[in-house]
Image 1 (spheres, rainbow, N blue to C red):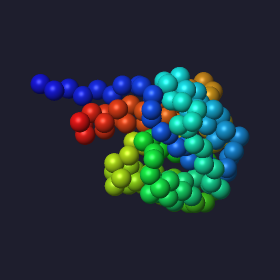
Image 2: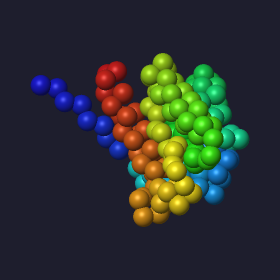
Image 3: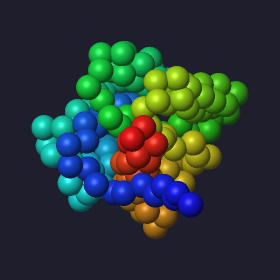
Image 4: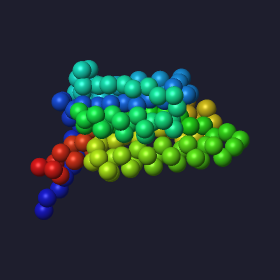
Length: 155
């Protein structure tokens, strides 16, 4: 029996983080968590790139362009979509989640989804370094692990 498990080894892994400026205070905390996770698992500073976009809706477009340019092993999406009084929340949350998932599948690149989709700013804060941890850190570590799995599957 063959069993494949991902390793959390970031040496030589090139990572691009796409971060939304909208809700920048929350996203900044997600970014710090993601960077901490990458560094903690051996990703070198020169292998980390951060790209800022206006909002979460723009993340998949920038991610697609970055993947198309090559040289990326992991892509980590970071943003915060907070429900308002209109259906705008559903459209943005669905578009960014579908877009990132589609890019990962189509281009077979490891992705980490650190886009919060929450009801309130308090919920976002709890997930961006508060009492519920840091989803940016979790997204970065998940991307590293998936990258390891993909490399093993290709071998």
